[in-house]
Image (cartoon, rainbow, N blue to C red; front, side, top):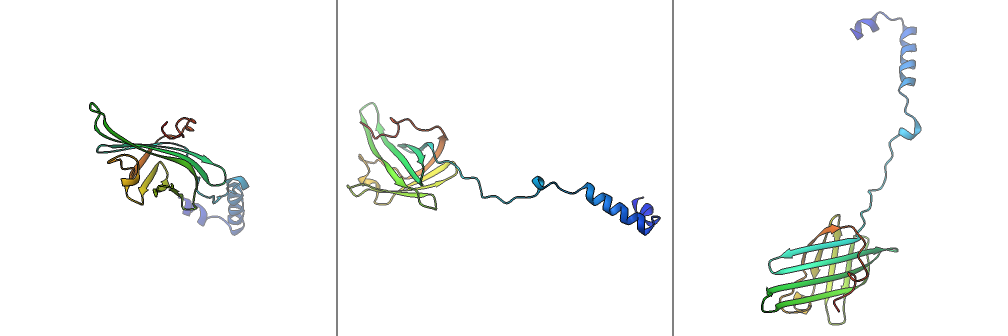
Length: 160
């Protein structure tokens, strides 16, 4: 039907229709496509993991200048009734690398690598977990983000 109508139009009328139609569909400047950088996710929050008898909590507070404050608190639960529970902990201020990783080193020879991605953090004990706290305490694993709330000062401290 449209083709039949267009075939009966004069060239002048077709030109007028094209001009009228194109100006009716001109996009406003604010409607133009914009390419923007991907939204950056905040690392701030609480991350948890559980694997076998190991459990861990990781608290992160993202600071300015690509720094993070962290506290990692882990448990190995053998037998709670007999007190067979061991702990490991680390806390401090770290530089966040451009690839969203951070490295922690303490004087006892412990080196932890934190690799952040949206909603999780993979923690890797680069020196073997035998130097991380008590017997069998293993911080290695994928910690899932369970909260985006800013951790309290108490959460960001090591065990007392």
